Image (tube, rainbow, N blue to C red; front, side, top):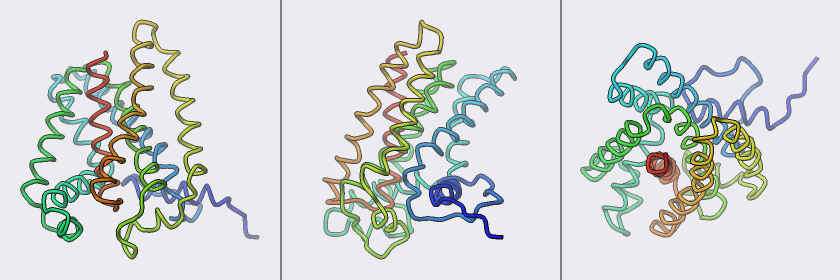
Length: 254
């Protein structure tokens, strides 16, 4: 007897595989069509794993700098470097100029601009995590959530620049506002949870969470206008840039 599995569950299983290196589900069979809508949920899960590592290392009396470096490294490891690879390729493409942009982004070799951009982002994220200190366990899931919402906005509002490529299915299967519904529900749930945290930091976290929508929309918009559209690489770049922006924002607020 064949058991019917809703397509959204298959897409969720596909998102689990596509956006992380976590072990795949034993069932159902994954589907890779409308997986982008579940990226924010995967982001929260990855963020919670990073926060858990922070707590474990804190219980072992690790230095704040060592904790920040370990947690940052775990974030890259859990995604298989998917987003930072896109960041470096996008930086190289923009540096190459409009005529050679897509060619440079497609090149498997990493240029000087890509390396410098990754170094800059690394230092900024580490600075934010060190400044956040014990509040990093709240800030990381928030940043991971909003950063995964950014590509959904980019997919829905900008043309895809490479029709026949690995990530073109995102644009092909996009259903606009429908794909934003899981993220909207998650944002409501997260905001409710934040309000239940200790009163002295709940307000600042709430403000930071609300302001997170600004880089979530602004960064993919700026990249989309610069590139005249988006690619899989610029989706990854948007993710990293939004995540970094929100960590810095929360570090200033808290």
